[in-house]
Image (cartoon, rainbow, N blue to C red; front, side):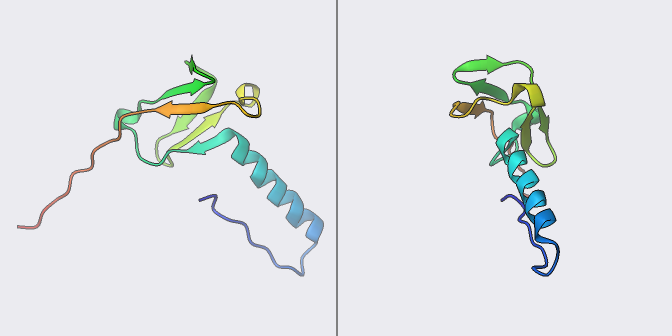
Length: 93
């Protein structure tokens, strides 16, 4: 789900670990939604408080990303509410 990281074990290991660390930091402020929201409308709650700003949502990847200055504190409860977009099944006649 994170896209994974692979590297040649014969490369300089310091830079490999540094790149992996950067990837892990991104996981702290990025949250992938399980389904596409209807009309890309979402409600984001942090510790029960509705957030009207401080984040962005990328509809193509279904990823919610908190802005650098608005990353919730460790242990915060994050809830994203949305109606799941319905996909139409096309039938062959």
